[in-house]
Length: 181
Length: 293
Image 1 (tube, rainbow over the protein chains, first blue to last red):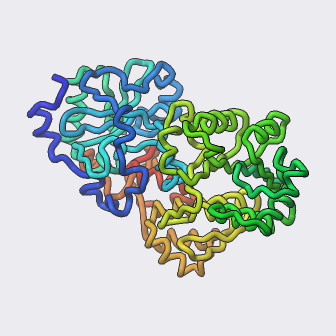
Image 2: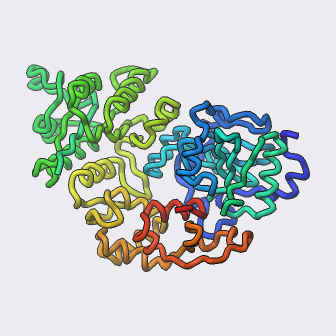
Image 3: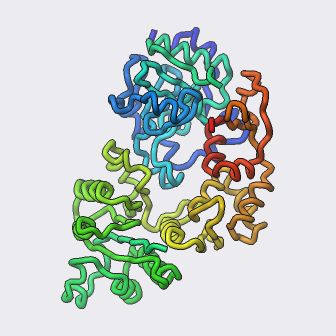
């Protein structure tokens, strides 16, 4: 059951634009040049409906136990080097390695020359929800909803269905880091 | 304080007979000769670079020996010096050399520079829009925190021009004081308890918003120091919640608070977050909604 089914859509809806519903951020004020375009990254975006590792994944990107604890990944914190960004768009889950170079973004957001969630969707693209995922050597996949564009405003129902959809895509041993709060 | 070594790589420095005859372009061009070129020659479309050289050389930091500036007309000359142990702290790298159209040498030299130094590299080019395709590659990913692309003569309307940014980056790396421009407004900057470099002001911009920050800068006489950063953060009335028992900061509007019935939260102002942790911690919480400490 790789692409979204009606059951998923019912709980994941509505699709939202970046920052839509955010209490303090807007697309107009908080989306910078380099964060708006997705065309140059599409070839690197992996369609997770096939439940395999993302395109840029290699064994060196498995999170070790030491990194898991040291960076509090299991509690939802970030470890950029091994972080994969995901969104669920109208069709399926899309994934990209966060450290994919985006030098254009670095020009406008100094110190952040790598991709963000809107480099998957594009400025005017919509998604149901988004966050980060980490593939760990212990076999678990740690998933959070830390995306100010698509995750912060998500309801519990959306989050739970996002996890279920990933499981339906046959991703195994998913740990929702919000359960560790 | 240690002298900051600045390398400037560009094959379009004005070529004058006197320097050609003296083989000046075949090795590191010293600051005196760069200044001579900047003062006396027509740099055509490189007038922004010309001004940057003038600004660096006439800066207080340069005069008291905290900055050393060398120019190279070819990257290979700079790499020779790097191999011989002369390491730049900051390197300004022109992307285009000669008539090369496939950019393979530009990519190769940049990677070599990143591999052989710990420098921060400004990739500086007039063809900036086309460069990302060459740099958005895995080979550069491990160096993403060490280089920055800039458009020659370009301007980000919400912050510094490319040259202003490079200039203030160099100056504030060398000394604790400087003057920066944001949107044409001069702002006096002093390294303080919260911001170590003038470019760190972009944290404030991202946290508080561009317009709000500009309005607040007026109230602190366009001067950034410890007291003014505290005033700006304090006047924002911004706050988060902290869960001391579980050790995390969470944004006040985060819906997890309701969804998970989270108790035991205490209010903590933006200023106290920055005092107890860092400005980058505050930015991370605001971006991610929650951050374990």
